[in-house]
Length: 386
Image 1 (spheres, rainbow, N blue to C red):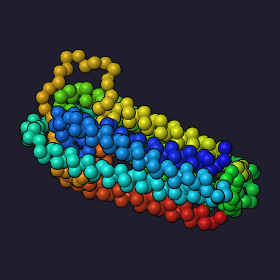
Image 2: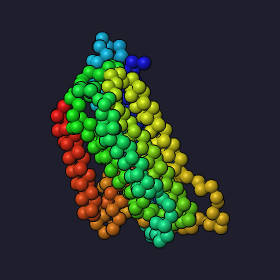
Image 3: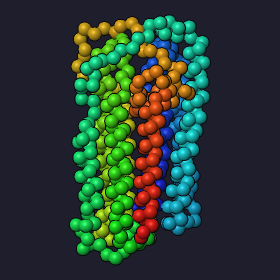
């Protein structure tokens, strides 16, 4: 299989998968929250809202399908293999960005519809009167995520092995090593300096740090418990957090292994990259499957998950979750200085976001940006040594 074909498959798969996941988002968020707006349960289950969700899914998937056409057109263009790969990479990046932008535009259309529907619904005022906040003091004692210590141990083993490999296998390294691969063959060679082999471990370290931080957020994210059946809701939330943590660790370890491959390809002077491309494609498919499976099975906060053991004697109670729409900007950005929580559930989508009303959230964002920039700059400088 030609490298351009693999690139095409990866890009088409990424665009279609992005479209399907984005389109399915209204079905994965909490049932009482539609397009970033908290609605009374009866309103959220209305035929009108069901039609909105269906329309949103169809339009999003259709946009992603149409976005693959320019990629497929590239196959019939009179281009060399290198030119075709360059075309696919450039157009593919633009198309993915366009799909996301159009999806956000579509979201705001339905966000406004949901907001207007809530304003017109008289039951919303009654719902506010019934709203309650529930907190479990034993929640943190339950196992909710894979320990970051275990994650760090596994990740650092791979990173250290990647960093030590050039030292242990120094006799295998020539004066020059392949640096970039295109169309199945190495197209650029650089001097085998220390800087050349430090880049991969640095990037791995950055990736591990970001994923460990993401895993940590699932341990500390603010509880969101349904008053109607608190015990069931707590179990759903715990299972959801553990499943998300397992996904992050699995995807993270796989990514660290994929990032280690170029290091060993340089050491052993591998001048053909089809195997690397095939492994990259396999990793992408693995990521898609585990992400889709987790999202469909659990949904946001675990609401789609059905506990294996029925909670006997627990009957639904009256009451709704506290309506905090006023603190959500466009249903996506949470700003509440009075809330001590730094991490909260996303309103639209799966996962967590931060409370921009807390200075700690801004500090975390700044530190992550600085660390990312520093490591990327250092990697570029070290790469320049070659």
